[in-house]
Image (cartoon, rainbow, N blue to C red):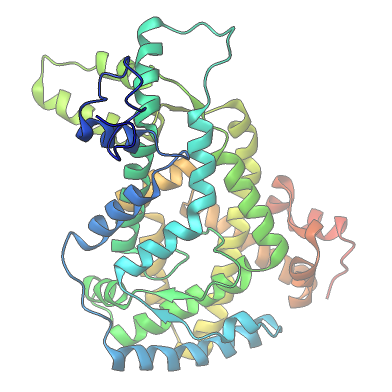
Amino acid sequence: MSADHPDSFGGSDDESNPFAGLPIFGDIMKMFGAQGPIQWDTARQIALVSATEGKSEPNPDPAARVAFVELARIVARQVQIATGREDATLEREPEVVTRAVWAQRTLDDYNPLFNDLATSLAARPAPDEEVDPFASMFANLTGMLAPMMMGMTVGSMVGLLAKKSLGQYDLPIPRRSGSMPMFIIANIDGFADEWSLPRDDVRMWTLINELSMHAVITIPHVAERLDSLIRRHAAGFRPNPSALTDKLQSLDIENPMDAMQSLQAVLGDPEVLLGAVRSAEQDELQPELDTVVSLVLGWADHLADQVGVRVLGNPSRLAEAARRRRVESGEETAFVEKLLGLRIDRHRVEKGRSFVEGVIERAGTGGLDPLYARPDSIPTVSELEAPGLWLARLDITGA
């Protein structure tokens, strides 16, 4: 093969290259050797297939989109009244998108998080660490495959999220600065039908919930702290080349049914499938991450209820259905929640809500003002449990 053949791998002068005369293997090796810790082209293809189940999606109905935008204007104004703050980002026209578009946008928004995760898993053991020879050989193989495996894993996770998500904050993760609120009407209407709720009311409640979360999670110092903690958690995993082989060897193959269930559990565990081992740094970080997530969710819930009463009168049934859906997440969110350290359950949400309501009870609605303006106002782990400690630290007097 000539030296300038486009399908050659490593050049024709490299006689040690066993694939030099086989262009197809050269292409495969080029794919494995792609730069970066994640093959994003693979991630996008898998996300698209997972989100749409390989079927063509119709564009959102234009009339439904126009009606949705009109509802959004009403909700945005009510959120600003409830917060007592003008927020230009709330006045942007929301985007009504397909699952495929949602998945592609979300991959772009989550790119830094997944890159941090993949980079942490690509780290090699230090020279003085003892590594089993077989595990080392397996690590070399998986190291070559890792970018493609990460692309497949990330794409699958985001594609599954696209099948369920109503807006862009089903997971409390800050989006790119300047991004528009984004909604999937097909999923919103599907949720309404599943719970036998009026579609128009569910659309309105989704807008209330999402724009309330947007008002909280886009506060600059809140977004910065939350983003930093999630990225630190994602970067905190440590590689364990033998994780998958150890688990597979421990399976009880005498009972085929039990073995199959165990295998499914193994392949659904990110710490095993990706060779990711939770570290002491992540354990130390988790209480602070839990605190900020609880604050954001509880604060947004409190705000949504205020707006909901004004717009819908008594949205309690809608709110309960939506909140049960959030904390009873299935495979669509469980995997990514574990990777990013997002532990979302009713108890943690209620802790955040109790903190906000405790502040208002002691200092009035103005007691929340520092949360909007001061980077040092985010409560500590102990302050989330005791709002009085937080008020004392910030020298906030009663109403």
